[in-house]
Length: 305
Image (cartoon, rainbow, N blue to C red; front, top):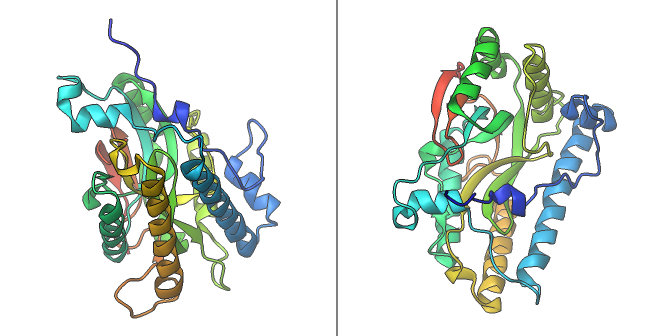
């Protein structure tokens, strides 16, 4: 019998560091909105608090004298290096709503990947055509038949949900590198200007509520105030084997974040722009299959603008 592969989630739990706790049965996205008095600036602040606190937490782990190793994704390792386990196939089927980044965000993400790879040349990079932001995860690590049953349950609601962003427009701003011991991403916060009353968190709340009305129980791995696109994952220890190497990695990330804050955040006509409206160019996509690393299939995609 094959040994059970321990998931990355089991070793690297993503906890909500904003300080907001939802009660069982509640819409967790609505809980945060209510705690923020439905005020965009407060929602933005909690997203910022979560990612800054998590980066500080991870910085301490990388530079700790007790550092032991990075958390390597065993499934991705087997998919990228078939010699580890010939014939291996990812058994984890999922059902999600994805927000696809527009071209100018893909351009920024690709540039960030190139900067990161200069310091960690063995980093696995998410292909740009696979990049996504998970707006809502309905189910994960299920069988194909189980996911098929869930798709049947929500099928009538899919057209309205994938097109939700055409009429409900939520703006994301202030990209920043977020990282931990298993992966690295570019994260955003909801905009909070005068016309940003409907935020990305409101969008997530409405998706959750609409799916819940179909009778499907939503089984997300985690619900945190984060809007991120995965850029890469670690497939080995070599790039971070010494304290000096890990220190160089952290310094590179912090330098990139400084560049983003000073050169990209408020840029209107510069080479890179960090603002995007969810649904820009492409509506939401509902996808199923083995999509952990950007794969799977699109059941339906909404209309972009």
